[in-house]
Amino acid sequence: MSAADEREDGQVDEERYVVVVNDEEQYSIWEDGAPVPGGWTPTGFTGDRSACLAHIDAIWTDLRPRSLRVAAEQA
Image (cartoon, rainbow, N blue to C red; front, side, top):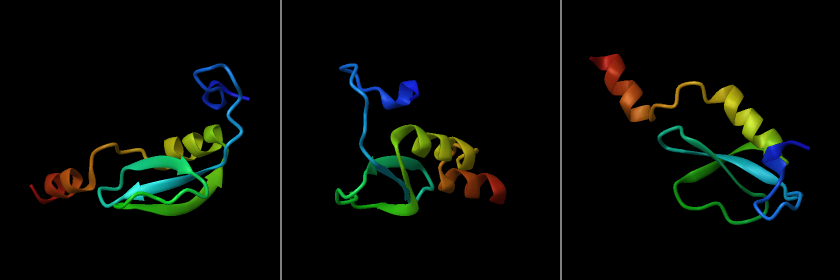
């Protein structure tokens, strides 16, 4: 268990999560089985909270929104 698996009340978070991404290629996690909010798309990666956050850390290396990256590339 990591600190990411512990809720604010000290209980272990046993929920499953799905990694989601928006049109700006920003990542987040959402409870698995809950409706994904508009503007977000599941990436296909699911797991416990710490696994999902580790996955995001590994793939989201440039935190700038996609529109900013594109503008910088065109400049």
